[in-house]
Length: 135
Image (tube, rainbow, N blue to C red; front, side, top):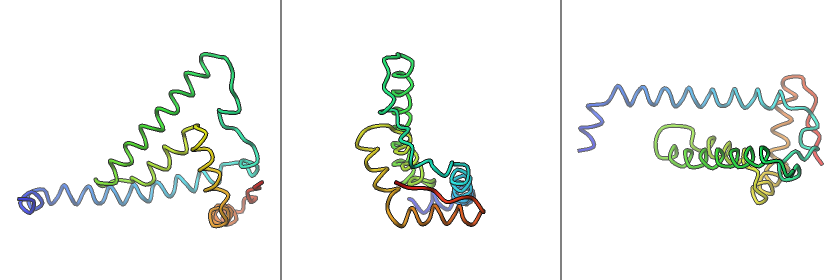
């Protein structure tokens, strides 16, 4: 049953595989560009929305929309784990967008690990840009 579907849709499966590989390399390129564009004191400034609480209704709506979008990306990433796509990248991006207290703690723990700091600074040094400053 499945073998028939695979043989009938062989070209489609090939194109999906090629698109998945291209999207993987595109995501690596975009990640490199983001790392290069961030200021070197990016991790010293705590710019989360939790620290910028205001009574403004527009700010509240913006934070809710941002968290909903992040949650949607996480759900899409979980789906992409089972179909061709960049599931893990989408999950990480969704979590990174969200401004919930427990996610902020996880982000800090992740970014301040020795391996991640070393990798981020390696990407910047390869491009001749000043290294990140961490607390």
